[in-house]
Amino acid sequence: MPEDTNKVLFPYLSTLFWYLREGVIFVDREYNVGAWSQAVESITGRDSAQAVGQTIRPSLLSLHSSRGEPISADDCPVAASLQSGKIRTGDYRIIGPSGREVKVELTVTPVIDDNIVLGAVILIYDSSVQLDLQRQLKDLYETSVLDPLTQVANRAEFERVLSETIVSCKKANDFNASIIICDIDFFKSINDNFNHHIGDLALVAFANQLQEHVRAQDLVCRYGGEEFVILCAQCDVDSAIDRAEQIRMSLEKTAQPMLDGKCITASFGVTQLRGSDSATDFFVRADSALLKAKEMGRNRVVAVATPQGEAMKSVKGKSLSGVTWKPEGKRTLLSEEFVTQTPISVLVEKLRGFIMEFDAEIRHVQSDFASVEVEIENRKDYSQRGRFRVSFEFCEKESAIETGGTRMKSYIKIVIREAKRSWFATNCKELAPTLLAEIRHYLMLNDESNKIRVDSAGSATPGR
Image 1 (cartoon, rainbow, N blue to C red):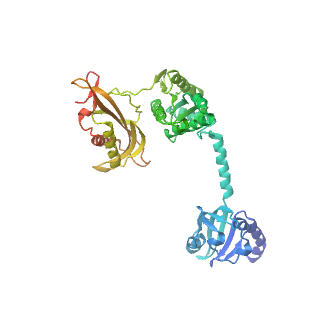
Image 2: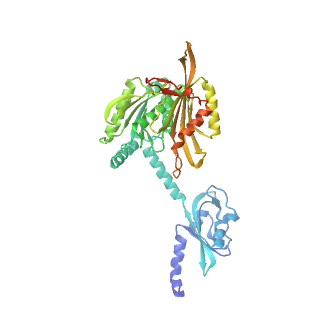
Image 3: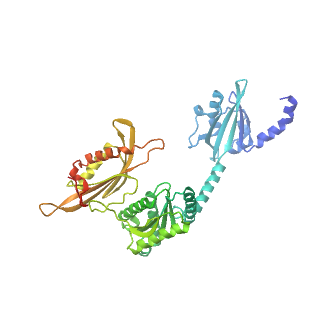
């Protein structure tokens, strides 16, 4: 650049350097500070007169990691850039002499001429203002979409997502979405017998249990008072019934400390989206099912039976053994019932052995129910792997024996469902029978007489 041009530009460049919002530092190849802008003074609390001519090091900037740990000389980003001739960028904290802490983004750019590193330009961007703004926006967003007490979605957010879901389903001509409406039974008596603060704690506990039983893509909402709604995307009515029943059973068996160990029960109404539905139609149909559940005695799940009809059905498990089991849902690969004279306590110990041997992940445990997730591989082809959700349900009841009288027998239902693996992995569902065989081995159910079958007359009997 011609000398005359330099003289003309120098006052402009000097003013630009001094008043830039981003902090700017010039250093030479000997690590000496040549310039220290006003913004750097503000960020570091150190005047340029104190810094110019000094050797640049992390301590001169009071540079700390994003976690607040002091940066050592060996980890100095300026030295790393000068030595490598490459740009270095990172998030740091600068703690000034007064203790003021500033979050910054620091970029070191080497100045290179004819393949020789002459020095570096250090840019320091104060990101704390942006982070504070982001935090404020996040707080504002949460205030607008969350119920302040239970921290689940509020009614306005539910209605917004519901409308979007219906539009999306109609556009895709896929109506695989369901609503579960639930209401705490006799909630007024909680407020009357305890107090409103305890009632609030019960609402929070109820909301937490709802969230524990839903998927990431489901939306839990407090619709008003003690009424909550779950919007289940990609979920047909049978799967929604299954989920509602799981929640209902969990609630009635979970002691609530704020209620002196008593349990909460709830009633549930379920329905699936139809092609002709408006948001109001969809919601009102589920709400009608909820009212029916209350009329039938509360603490139950009632659903609109099919997308074509208005008939209501109360959910009860059906089984070959006559035992009332939990609903299975539609993703079931295998479902078998067994009977044995082995006590349930022994079966549970055997199940512990299976869990330890296969490194199974325990998902849910109750006194008569357990759910685990387990991955197995084909021993002849290790590339074939399958991940499954397995539920075990136990029941003891007296059964008649041929010599007269009765004998206590243990009934067990094993349900195997497909579980998701990582997005790039193929789940080998064909391994489900292999898994069932392993489970039967551990639970000592290898004898075919343990398996309950349907005989030619249509009645259920142990296999022969």
